[in-house]
Image (cartoon, rainbow, N blue to C red; front, side, top):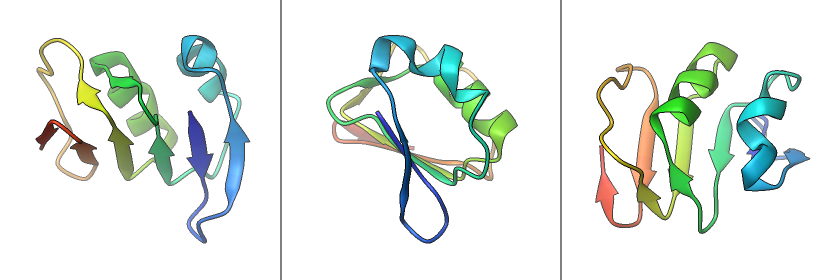
Length: 80
């Protein structure tokens, strides 16, 4: 998973399995691309707290019950 700043520069590249736990230590990310990974509710929650505005990934995982209006989530198999 890669995190990008507002200028589109990669600011972190993390293994997806560790990403949610390690994301809190990263600041100034505006976009997350999970690549082939799943976008989970937990990822959305942590990203929102960080101020991330865009999340892109292969698919949505499970049931996404709450998505803040000011965060864009795009999955190859679904767009919310």
